[in-house]
Image 1 (cartoon, helix red, strand yellow):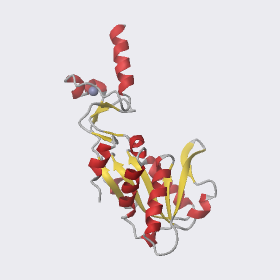
Image 2 (cartoon, protein in one colour; image 1 turned 90 degrees about the vertical axis):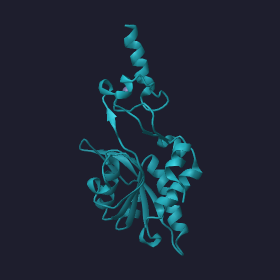
Image 3 (spheres, protein in one colour; image 1 turned 120 degrees about the vertical axis):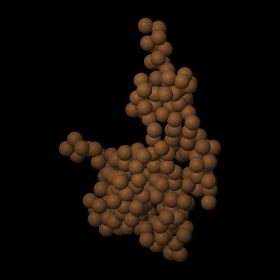
Image 4 (cartoon, protein in one colour; image 1 turned 60 degrees about the vertical axis):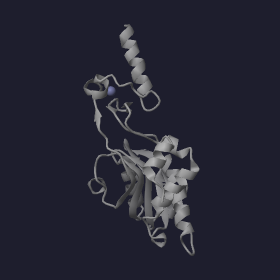
Length: 215
Ligand SMILES: [Zn+2]
């Protein structure tokens, strides 16, 4: 079994003890860069082996994830479950974004709906922050009469336990605390700790600071 936090950190997928500006504009110390993870098929494959290990290989018919990262994870998790079965194949599908009556949701297109209907489905996702997109995949499976047997994710940075977010078992490979502050209240800014300009909105934040210093 791989040491998950170390492996994520070595791949540059997990940054801790830094000074990061998130997409929301808030500041914090930790950042999960899933794009850095997917550069490395060997690591992705190893993480997905751990994700697959939470299920009985014959207890899952299909693995489903949301675009984009969930496509990659679904393939590897389904592959590992298939390898562990004496016969038969576990399929991999993905759910795309769709908008219905102004509400964003997830749907199975491309004939994947027929593979999900009435099946036992393991849902996969990379990072759960609010849990929104994973829940939409769960809803899409259930809308087709499928049974969600669990949700496996790389990283839980919601600050909440799985049972507080989902009504299916949550298996998270890593849990990263989401301590964050508004820029004005950021203790790292107050201490003059340099902002990490390589991830998140750090570079934009610094450019904005320079802009306001010049005006
Ligand atoms: Zn700050």
